[in-house]
Image 1 (tube, rainbow, N blue to C red):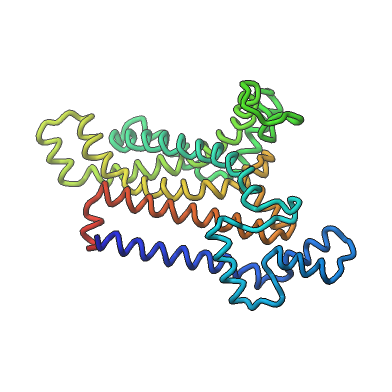
Image 2: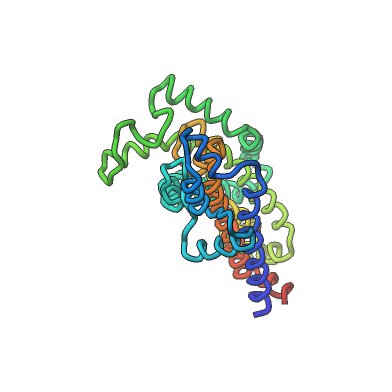
Length: 327
């Protein structure tokens, strides 16, 4: 119980700090949404219109910064993230909702595949260290050091430009209206294959190396030696004793990776012109759309925070020593 209370207090404080910083940071930056909106539309705005815009963006001149902060919390508690002036004054939550499924589908699926393959390969290579499986390590190290954008450009040049197997950009064909038809689903899969393969190859090496190194460390532990001395089958020793303990750091890293899924892989989305959250954040920054930036930062921060909570829960379940140390 003490472990749960401590962690709950820590994450509650972290969430408060993140939301507070998210409120004050844009207000300490040069300019504001009203000025940016007026510059974009280049029209004559009377004082009443300017006051209405400031109220719309939560920057009422007759309210103190503290009152704006209180109002901001009130908006958050009702699910109101404000409006985005670069998207036609559409609600920020609706704008983010248009990009979030694309990022979750692409980066989420790619991260899960990369984690599963990398952990499986790393456990086998570590278990059979000194075998031919070690030849994978140089390739894994190489792919883990290659920048995302470079690998993406190589895949585009080979599989799109030269072979013509996959489209080079966007999430579906131009002129297509998103729907639930098999044709549209096929377009999404075809357009998402190269970005997904790029993410998998770029991150696979890290998972392989991490799991392989942990397996080598775990194999020297006494409980593995005792299990082998009992005459247990090698597969059982691998699954029940070695891999189960070696995978704990991997699970923590995987939980954090799930949190960063919401932020998207910015470089990959830019190279492939993929309509994800990462590209939306860059567009919002270039447009100085502070409300949309605020909403995106908040969603990404909360996703990472929830991923940390998930990692703590998994660790506490799989490793009771964690709870004992906290008690």
